[in-house]
Image (cartoon, rainbow, N blue to C red; front, side, top):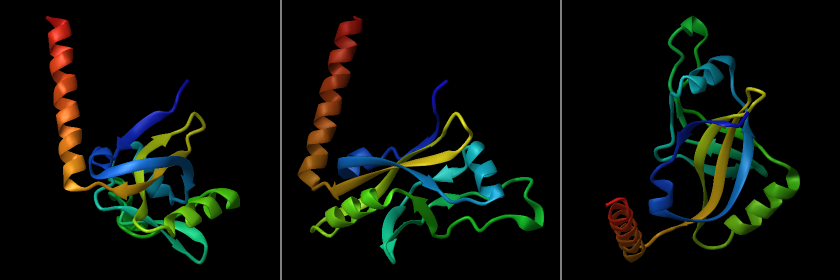
Length: 149
């Protein structure tokens, strides 16, 4: 069996230049994990920050669970990410450099049923870099069409 991808941050590769990727655990409540399994997670404008040498994800929207009742969770709040101390130190050193940020790339469920996030150290692309990315995609699409015909 393999990991089941729940959601991807499709715009991450377009807006950011990705350097180093990490897989992290995330602390969730019961209704949050149920909602994630239904695919109700949104990465728009989410990013990771360090608070007291711990990594948190901010602005991650996990919709309320449909059968949650009174014990439902708040859709948007800071959630702690679980990494080894050595990884946290390496990420923190890299982010202190000018222009680097940490963004979520995807969310998946492991074979054991645990929710994991894939995050990346990244730097925002300039407008000319984005244009180049669009040109590459167009060229690839044209070559794929030519090979099919």
